[in-house]
Image 1 (tube, rainbow, N blue to C red):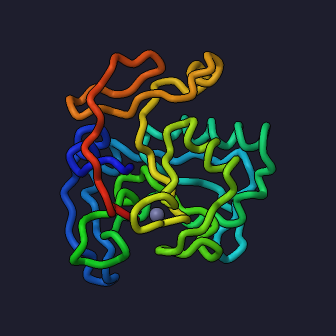
Image 2: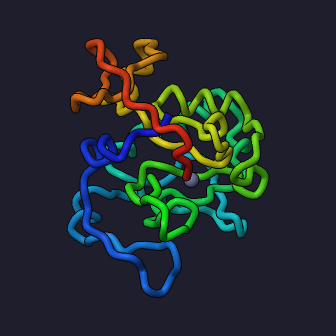
Length: 203
Ligand SMILES: [Zn+2]
């Protein structure tokens, strides 16, 4: 399940924001937080926008960047990367479902991304490729397709692993999630309390 708002703030930072007057549901995030917390990576597998253009850069939170790159390498090595037909966005500062009445989406922190959105629309219980889902899960990214309201295009960081290559080479397959006392998960976790359930959190 997705991280709670408390965990999002604790692990990925608190930013000030205001609603974007020019785009319903979008928000404008304080530049200071953007400068301190976001980074740009170059995908190492071919990714296309919904319009078919190559993705040159992905803007995401610094704390997930190496894990995202590690998944790309894993996909390239073990799965056909063509399982990802479209990359539909990572850092998109906005409310859930572009609805200003809803809380902020995890996309606002740059820790979530959408894949194959046209084939896996929000609210439909559809199965993305299990091998791909498992690959993302190994690096801490949960698939939204099993949530109470399924969001089958959506993947979100729910476990923060300190060093993807080390974790991977040591065969760790079930690292603990970040706990609610503020300890980040690691490859050698102490037993943490389970995060509070966030049923129905989507987008
Ligand atoms: Zn999403």
